Every structure is written in C-alpha cells, then in structure tokens.
Image (cartoon, rainbow, N blue to C red; front, side, top):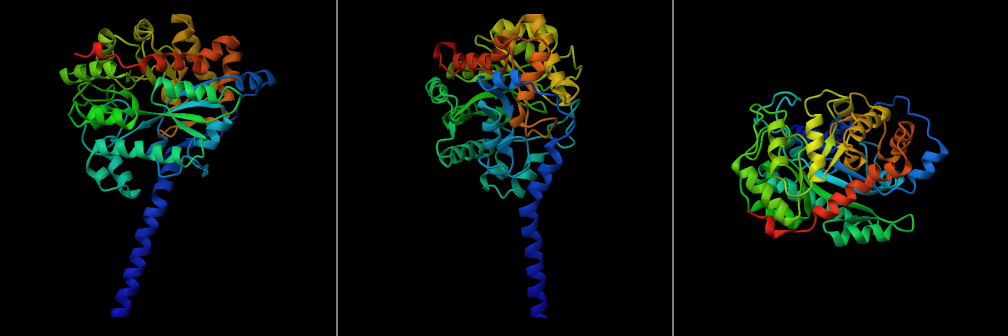
Length: 393
C-alpha cells in the first residue's frame, strides 16, 4: 500500500510539474497568433529604405509571457532576435496586470482576474499573486534581467540621456535594441498616488489610465459606466506630466479621452489602436479625437490586428494612416503593434518591412515614412521624458 501511495504521489507530482511546464506555452500559442495569410510583395526600394529607418513601436505585451525575451523560442510575435531582424530601434514593453473575466470589447465589469491564473501557472513570486503593483514591478525586473544578460544587445531607455545614447550607438547601422517600460491601466497603483513613484523608480515612463474595465482613475471604452476621469485620475495625470511620464489614452472611454485631452499640458499618445473612419470598432478614435491628440502635439500608434484596422493586412494599417494624414498630417502617426497582446496578426516584428512597403504603395514619401515608423514617436518621447515639476497640482 505504501509503495502504491508513493507511486500515486509521483504520478501526481509529474502531472502538476507538467502543467506548470507546459500550460503557459500552450496558452500563449493559442492567443498570440500569426494567421499565415499571403504577405504583400516587398520591393528592393522598400527593403533599402527600411534599413535606414529609426523604428519605434509604442506597444507590445511581451513581458506578460513566460519566455526569455532574448531568445526566439518559436512562439509569440517578438523577441530580441526578431526585433533586431526587423530593424527596430525602440520597443515599448507594457505591463498588463489584470484583465476581467469574460473579456470583450463592449462591456466588462472589474470582477475576475484572468492574469492571476497566468501568474500562478508561471510560478511567479508569491508577492505577485495578490498585488497588481508587484506584478508591474516584476515585469520591470524581467526587463532589467534581460538587459543585464543581453551582452549589450538590449538597452533600457528611461531618460533623454539613455535615449540619445541608444541612437548614438545605432548610428553606424547596427547596435542595441532599446526597451522602455509602460503600464496598461493604472489600476496597478492600487488607489495610492505614492505608488506612481515606485513605478517611476522602476523605469516606467508611459502609462495608460484604464484597460478593459473601469477603475478608480477613469472609465474604459470596454467598461460598464464608461465615465471620464475621476478626481484621483486627474491627480495622477498631473503627477505624470510633472514627473516626465507620457499619458496614454489607449482603451480610455470617450469621456476619459475628452477629459485628458482637455487638461493635457504635454503631448498625449494613443499607443495602439486604430481610427473609426476605416474601422468602426469602439476602441478606435473618432476624427474629433484625432484632431484633439494632434493639438497636444502627440501621436497615435496604429496597429496591425483586426480590432484596430478590421483586417490583418499591412494595407489596412496603411489605409488607416492615410486617413490620419489627410485629416491632420503625418506628424501624428506612429506604430502601435499590440504584439503579444493576445492578438492575431499577419506578420511578426521581424517582417516590419511589410508596413514600409504598404506605406510606399499608399503613396507616402520616404520622409513621411521616416516620421511614421519612428521619428514622430521619438520626438514625443524625448519631450515627454523631461520632468517639469511646475506642472504638478
């Protein structure tokens, strides 16, 4: 009997171990997908132009998943080898800390915590099991470890000085890929303004106010009430502007977007999404909102998945960008892939020349493409990283 009990315990231990080993990878393979539909033909002109670009992607969720960002392990949409192959200069990596049960684009309560299951399955530190703030700090530590282990091939960017150093190191045509920390929904503050200091100290420099549910700062486009900024939300927006953190309106309700753009004293971004004119999905920006972002001097990151551009073709991304160009000019345009954000796309980050080709086909000039692929984002980030304490209060 004792021997049978030991054998049963061993089998159970094996099953449990197998779950923790295999479940995170299986889950990610089912959620971060490439549809393998036909890519557009890429010309020699596009390839040559692409290699001269300073490319910035304003949003991906790579840090959420249990894999080494320095290695291509055959799943997801990006990692350091694929970023280098795509000629990416700077990737903004987001911290996702909570998503609601039965998540959808239209109506979510704040109940449930899908990320908790992933946290447990990945055997993250116990402090991350119960604290949203600790989940973000853990993501920051993951980036720091990756930078330390990259042999100089991945560089953390959290100041104008580190940004300029990155660009100087890449001036010869090769060099490290930069990485900047962002937050997708400031519910990770856990209601405490002082936690913004902890995020800043960890290197977070961009933050969205809400994600898929209403929180104590603002309404979400996917929430229940979909309200505007709360008094706490207004306090945090002012604190971010003073510290040198860029405010991101992606996922904000229309009321939240209006409130932020009305009070903003610094450039505002919409890190990832699309526009209503070419893809009438609720999370995408109206023409009036596009004009208001432009008035702040900010940028709009256009994505590559169907929720952003109603297709996965790079031509759909280029058409959304053409609408913004015709409405307010090219200086408002940027990339916002939402790679590794439980999205299905046509191409991974190693194939970003697909976007360059689609923009050429949409009659954007090489100088306009330089701005869209990274120049505009670099301008806004450089300006936004400078602390301005006089903006507090």
